[in-house]
Length: 113
Image 1 (spheres, helix red, strand yellow):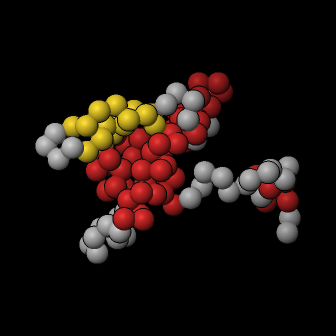
Image 2: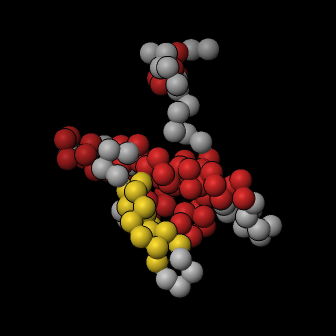
Image 3: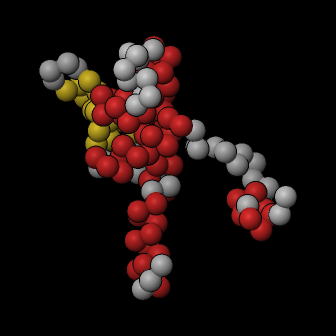
């Protein structure tokens, strides 16, 4: 394997795949699309697209909630069904891994990509 083609592995990080799970990426996407506050239902819609038609299994729902607890704070329950409203933490991985924000910062520094 050529290490130049895999820059994230060239420096041999301790956990190269940390934060790159299917549900973790889906939760990051839902915050990018809907902003800093989302409901649990919106997170389920993004994270459980493949199993939406079969019904959500309890394990999959709790996986989404576990990831939400890592990157966001629950604010309150919202009517009519009582889904939780979540606010993204300032220090979370989802903020740092936002590709749109990183691209904007690169443009501001250099004037081009």
